[in-house]
Length: 165
Image 1 (cartoon, rainbow, N blue to C red):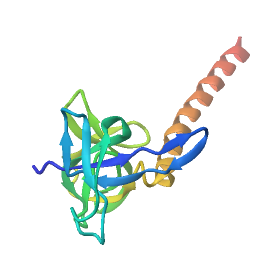
Image 2: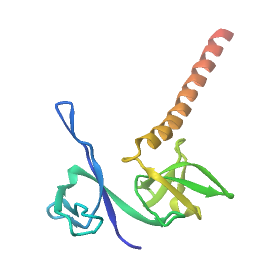
Image 3: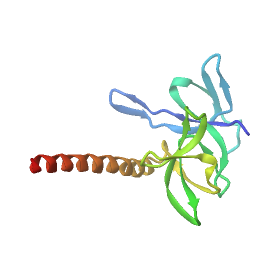
Image 4: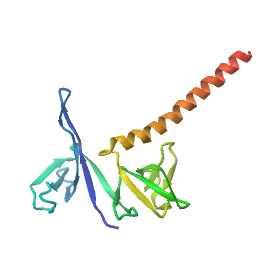
């Protein structure tokens, strides 16, 4: 497996004002002793030609490459949002997560169901939770609509019990 990382540079907000909106960078080096990542600002899409930059670990979200590529050859990283090909049709939107208990990458749907990332033959990368908040909103709306429906169901059952007494 190839070891690669991307990093989401966290937005900077001072006094309620957005100073920096955040961006995704390719990590060239990780300095664990100084707790920093090193990346190069892109210059005409030529790596290592731009200005060398360093950021502290607390300024970024480090996103490891999972070792899996989608059907178009795009690398899939932690935090990506993907669709899976299941029974010849594209299904759902899944978030790529790290499962601590099982020490493996998994995909999680909006209902909290998880599958091993290697379980399916084909993936289609749609974006990630950092750069595509609109996709994350859709994913979260599905998740919270199930929770809300469950709460409403429980309330309805309780009301029915009270009415029957």
